[in-house]
Image (cartoon, rainbow, N blue to C red; front, side, top):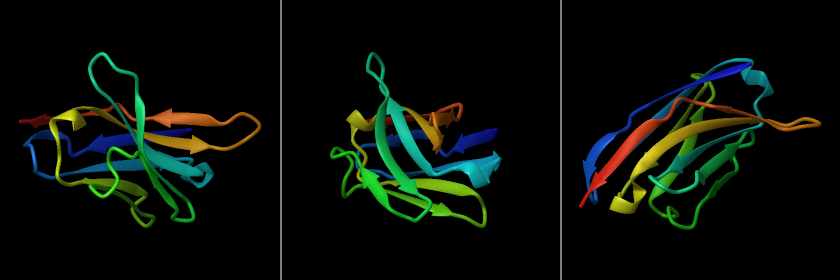
Length: 118
């Protein structure tokens, strides 16, 4: 089992920055990929960015050049630095941990609200 706790959301004006944190605990050795997803009102949850155990990263086109995902293995924490925020970045941001296996398993955090005002 993996437990994920997010923090760092809030209200910010367009053009501002926020940093989200996701602390993992439990069977962290089993995690292969960690990422951030977001869900805007009335929309489906979408991938924002992910980072592998090897440090490879991938971003949604809509956030490339503005968001940076990173990890601190000593603290078992993944971060999402969000710069140049836009109103369309508003939503609930969820931390995700994926464990590969015969059937991949996803763990989710409780979500943290990010609101960008225009």
